[in-house]
Length: 111
Length: 112
Image (tube, one colour):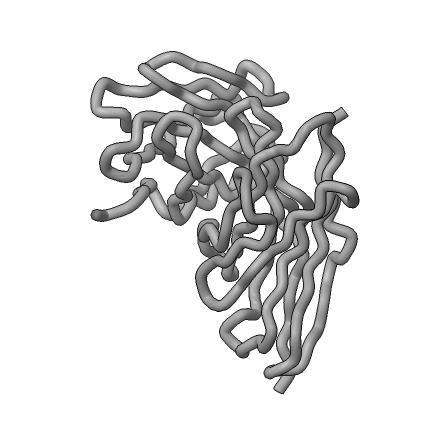
């Protein structure tokens, strides 16, 4: 079992650009959640996808959007990047409401 | 309001010494409770979880945690720390809304 995988590992963008991050859930999991972890802080919930629908959303602007595919993989899109979007983006998968398993994250740097 | 507090930002212990990391929450019921560990530049690894039942739960790497309803606490313990335990530790309740709410974390430093 490969566990949760994320790509890319690192990404550097400039302000105003758009970025897409990808996540493949652990085998058998149907729910994907995304978190943003700024340097020195705990992860903050962005949103969660289940059955290809956004089930819940945290306190993030509409510039943050996502998608879940029929194979349960997911994408996180961020438009009009700001310097403050620089962070580690973590994907977690779970089976319904059970424990969440995290991927290694994507480190996004916005210059 | 639902919230979680990890009062200790940074803890330093000697290798072989015991460890206790504190976690308190505010919620009208008992949440699902989790402890995660994060090594530098890495993702999060689940150490242990509490859903219901026995209030002392055992996890991986020799960690345990005790749920105390009266104190709204879920403190993490280890009898004897190893240098490899140096990391950031996060308490993360699930307040019944399918998402995890993370504390600010406690950074653990181990000295020889």
